[in-house]
Length: 506
Image (tube, rainbow, N blue to C red; front, side):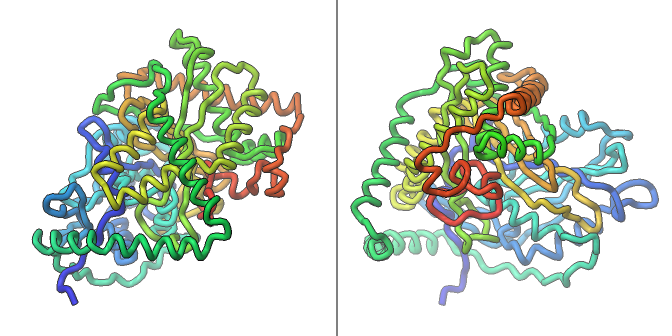
């Protein structure tokens, strides 16, 4: 038995490291706002030592948080190894706003944290505990590299680190015993043996796939078609807009909330999915924003990348990425909010039927075979032909607590890809739809105006749904699924949710 221990990153996880540059930060972030509650100190601050103890007590359940990258010699591919020098004090930062700290000041602080890249010589995460927030609250700005988690595993992680009740009993801390890391020679030898085994792995995988597939020819054709469609987008650039261009290293964040029930009510009236409502809302906001920037929206081929979870039930609780994506054209040329929604609904139904997300999934799976070529191609296919990212992660609809302090809101920030100056991320929690916005201030200098456009667009859609409660026509695909929009109301909270696989709660 080998004396060392390590885990090779998947091709998809590694792709987020390859995409990162000095001006492109590939960490996933969120700003969580809590009631101070029992974490309030007699002096009015927040008990940072109790917070550290709580994190320390659960780290054995998420070993990736005490692992760092080590690179295979002669390969542009890393592995995870235990960090023998791990220090919790490095990863948990304590700061404060000048009292009484406002939400505007908190947004500015979160943006500064977002601007700083994670140190690749250490485990790739940071938590910033922020006290001084008015209203007897505190905040936690979380920053985790995308190579560690996707939206689904991020919610799994939240359920480990927080509890469903205000009780503050902590589990017994498990001592940390780092395992020896392999030498460069051992990593190179292991990679050589892995490559020799790939043909056998491919034969075995194909045999299992064929045994589990009723119509092998159709399933193979479907995957070839999905990859071909995706590659077609890679060579058809989206329209140039003011929010697209070379990124600076700077970021600005904003956020807002709306009642989740308002979104679900509109979804029920219009007989579509929650994600149709979200994409239609974003479409209306982008249209209004382009007009403000003196761009004719009628002439734009504007595309968003909508991440789609392909995480299976057995993947719950595991870190890493199990995600694909749709490329959705937004109907910016349509002024009527209901017609925009109808067009979005028709588009998403076609994407479900065509299973476009299989294309990204196939490229990411193939990346483990020829990472240098296919990872670059996959990155181009998923980031090159789009204008922005819109991702929606449904979370728990019950209150969560950190050492008895109630989580009030959590606002996600999606990383910006090269050439995309604006990203929109949503997280539903405890009856709220929390919208998080991340932007390059050089490309989007007026982010608050876009946030206002989101509010206006949703209100227009809500008003139109009330005045014209005409259900969207059910497609044949919808009828076969037996559910409005082909997806249940609970599952509809995820952007596209899953394609052909079991879906997680996020």
